[in-house]
Amino acid sequence: MRVISGTARGTRLVSPGAANIRPTLDQIKESFFNQVGPGLEGKTFLDLFAGSGSIGVEALSRGAATVVFVEPNAKSRRVLLQNLAKCKMMNDEESARWDLLQSSAQASLQTLKNRGLRFDMVYIDPPFSENLYEPTLRKLAASGILHRDAVVVVEHFHKTVLLKNYDKLRRYKDRRFGDCCLAFFKFEDSL
Image (cartoon, rainbow, N blue to C red; front, side):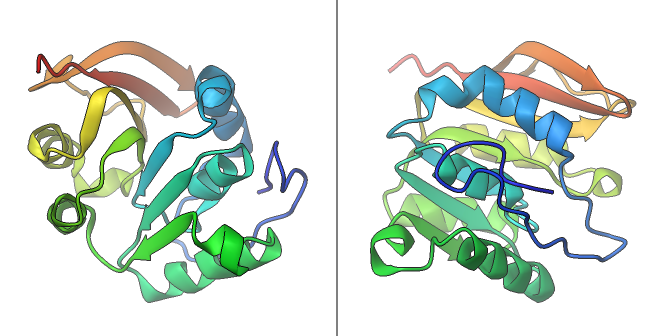
């Protein structure tokens, strides 16, 4: 697990090492950022189910203006902070670009709304076995924290069936990598 591009390119990241934590493979991460990466500069990014922080750290490295990591597990948060430190993102200037919420993904949506935050891009990678896709996507669509035309990307097991739409989230693309898939949604707000 490493940072693929940007200011922290090539930095090896710490892995959580727990059986119930499944870091995003470099191949999937690289494909995701190749598809959205050119448009990351200056964007706001939400890493739900952040785990080791691999996705959000990559977004920071590639120029995202701000990244919010959401992770309830204490061990994963420690690993995430180690990864930010390894990538030299803990100094005052860099740490102003990110925040770490100790919260479940769904509970964090209300917290983010209360803070007045809105996002251009969201990455969702829940534990495959916990069936959190539909409730998370529906709550996210109704949360009021997405900018118009925000992109929401969901990493999921290939046998997991996702709907074409979750309220104002409309799926427009899918990519498969072995047992993992990425589903791309756009937030279509008519306001």
